[in-house]
Structures are given as structure tokens and as C-alpha cells.
Image 1 (cartoon, helix red, strand yellow):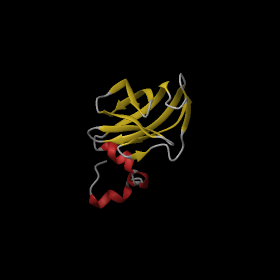
Image 2 (image 1 turned 120 degrees about the vertical axis):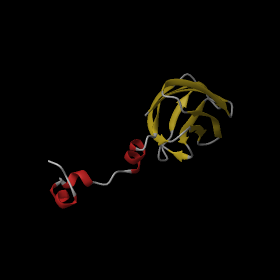
Image 3 (image 1 turned 45 degrees about the horizontal axis):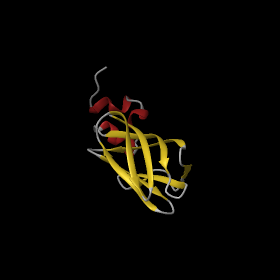
Image 4 (image 1 turned 135 degrees about the horizontal axis):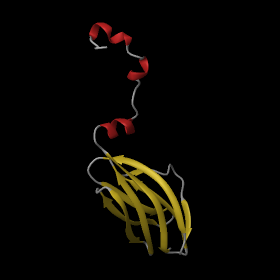
Length: 127
């Protein structure tokens, strides 16, 4: 069947549902970064209460990850972006722990340091 303005009302209503901002961005060609895991090489005060921001957005909704030197945590937070994603790590008590930028597709690990702490962050960028 060919659709025109005259028979447009025959289309199922489900075809016209509203898209979320995330869905719209993906359709427009944006990318998605997922923080997969974090490994604490050295915690500045023996332990940190980690949280991440991606392009300035707190993607953990106020939750923190309690981690000690040698610890590994599955993170599993994601955010859509255009161009380049700026990922920053923070300790709830001591501020910035470092940052990195990501734009290329694939899974990578980046080392960040700050405030006496060092972390390896593994992430994936997809279309």
C-alpha cells in the first residue's frame, strides 16, 4: 500500500510515538560512551568515593562508588554525545581525580590521575 495524506490515518498510531532525547540523538548520528569499569591503582587517602561526569552531566545521579587501592568496580553508566565526550572522575570528598576525552569507536582504557589518586578507566564508544 502506498501512503499519502489521504490515507495517513490508516497507519498504526504506534509509528508516531515521541522519541526520548537519547533516541533522537542516536537517530541523528550521535555516539554513545559507556564507562565499563574502573580500577583503582592508588587511592589518595586509602579509599575514594568516586563519581563520573560526562560532558558536565553527573551520570550516576548522586551515587558514588566506594573503592580502595587495588579495587575494581563495574560502572555501567552511559551517555550520548556528539563530537567528543569529556569524562571527569571526582572523589566526593577531595574533588577532581582527572579527566580524558573520547571520540573514537571501540573499547579503550585510559589512565587518569589527580588528588593523589590514579585510576584506569575502561570505556566503549559506539555509534
